[in-house]
Length: 139
Ligand SMILES: [Fe+2]
Ligand SMILES: [Fe+2]
Image 1 (cartoon, rainbow, N blue to C red):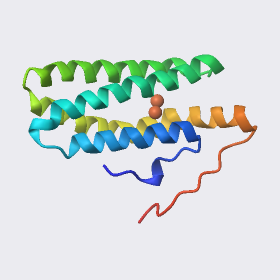
Image 2 (cartoon, helix red, strand yellow):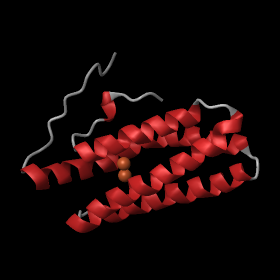
Image 3 (cartoon, helix red, strand yellow):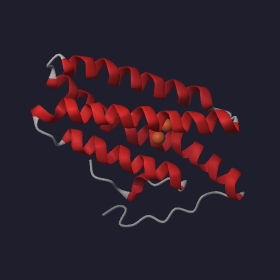
């Protein structure tokens, strides 16, 4: 799952976090069995910070549809932690299944929930919709 500018949403701090998300997930998807635990631990640390950052933006700015977005973050983090426990007990396959599920989940989450938050944050900062410059999308 390499980074693609399709994922850009136009709010810089969020785009930077999403690049890190994709890089860490990609590292987990492509790693050897012996590295699954360590890569998933790194991913979990990222996910905690990523979701806390977005939750904080939503809380601080009173983003109207914040509840379902915050709930989705919490549900994903619960799954990551449950699977991390299994991986720590040696169930590497479960870690790989989670990585594939996260790769399926992220584009929809970014498109439906994060993009609305990105627009909201840009609008608050600059009074307009974000302009996104994407390279090589669709090739
Ligand atoms: Fe996000
Ligand atoms: Fe999100």
